[in-house]
Length: 89
Image 1 (cartoon, rainbow, N blue to C red):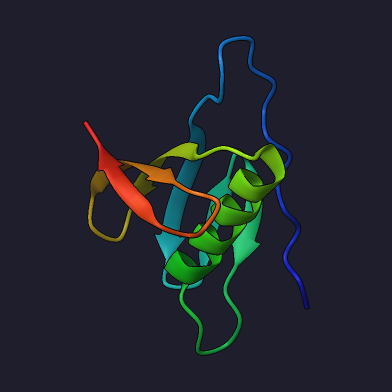
Image 2 (cartoon, one colour; image 1 turned 135 degrees about the vertical axis):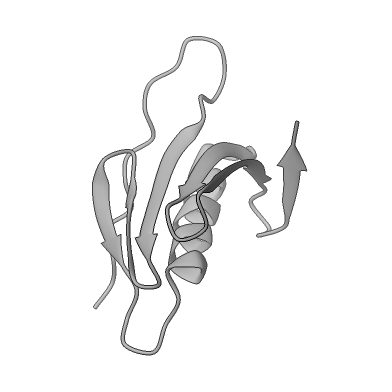
């Protein structure tokens, strides 16, 4: 089953950060839309795949703020259309 790709929020000054919240190894939210990993999958792979699809649709890198409740931390990433990622300040 294919997970729905959340629609990017409108932005007047370029792409705004996707808001990602990870709750467990198989569940999270992207911009308020629930996403789940398949059995034996990892939510991290699902999230990055969806954000890569968003970057491909936009034709530009997608910034994301990822809050991971499993570890109690947050990180900002830039996900490129080719799937590469880089950490943002």
